[in-house]
Structure formats: structure tokens, C-alpha cells
Length: 251
Image (cartoon, rainbow, N blue to C red; front, side, top):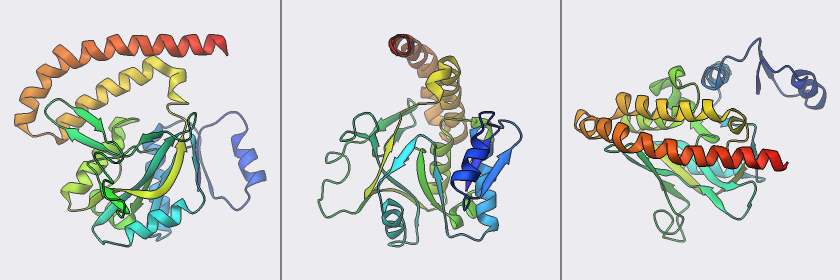
């Protein structure tokens, strides 16, 4: 299933001609990432599928990775969300993401390291994490039925983190499958809208904490957010934006 979010570049025709067996769900306008994903999930549930694989358009996949994700999911009925190891598209040997540890006190998502934080044991086939990057996520349909959809208020960013936290509160496990691999073009779309991206990241972190953190965490997080996180983000975000603009100028 491909969800087209109001494209105006002929994508619909190209998909229909090149991949006639693909079910194309067309939105008349761009309704936002999360709402589009939720429409896809709803269609999947109506088809009575066992798993739903949310897969962004800037990701390529290694052969048999879906099978490897499902095999991990079948090992434990409480495993509800399964992610692959995400490698950098630009540097294919470099791991971009293998899951996060969430610090609710300061709103930090710490990137986990292969061999240090997870997969210290060579024989491990999966590792449990607090959350994972949502560009490629396999979810059991039973999880969606119990947890609900992604929250549309996020629009983009932190929607998968929020979903993972809610799933864990319902007793499901969020894991990364060691042998499943994808390659991700980081922010390939949103780097074209750098100010919008910055706004969503800042706003959605705050929303995520309000929705999921305990009161004791918020008493620390809120002053930390305004006094430390916000100035830090704006400073380094400005540098990042200039790098992107400079890179576009060279290209």
C-alpha cells in the first residue's frame, strides 16, 4: 500500500503504471504525515493483517529484512513494535539509529550504541529499547487495537516516540532486530523546510513530555527546556541550517 499525500508531480500515475499490484491510497491534499499514516493503518486493520510496516519514502531495505522483523515478533507475544537497525544512506556501513533511551527529566532521547548499550551478547537477536526511529517500524495489529493510532497533533516528529511509550505502558515490548537492515536518507524531505522542521522538533518535544512524563519530571523538564534546551537547540540548529543552505548552494 502506498499513501500519496496530495502529490502534484505525477506520482500517482507513475506508481499505477510501474507497480499495478500496489494499492494506492490517494489523498486530495497533503493532510500531514501522521494523519496519512493513520489512514494507512486503518486500511491495514480493515484487511485483517497481523502486522503493519510503516515505511517512509526515503528508506531502502535489505532483502529479507521484513521476514527477519516478523521472526523477532513471533518470539514473544509481548513484543509489539519491532524496528530494524537503521544505517546511513550516505555512509552505508555507519549505523544511524539502533534505538533510544528516554530521559524524561530533561527530555533527552539518547542514541544507543551497538555493542555498548545493546547487543553486547553476540547471540542476541533483538534488544529492548525505550523507543526507535519511526522511518521503518513494524507494529503488530493487536498493539494498534489496544494503544490506538498515532496522535495527529504531532503531525511529524515524536509521534513514534509517543506511540512506543504508550505501547510500553500497555505491557508491550519495543525492540530492535539485529539482522534486519534498512538505509535512511536523514531528513531528506524536511531539510527543504528547515524552519518548519525546527519548529516541529521544539514543539513536539514539549508536547511529548506533557503527554507522557510524570509531574516530578515536568518540574525539572520545563525550566530546563526554556533555560538550556531551547537556546542550545537554536544555536546549533542555526549552524545546521547554514550547513544545509551551503550544501544546497554547492549542488
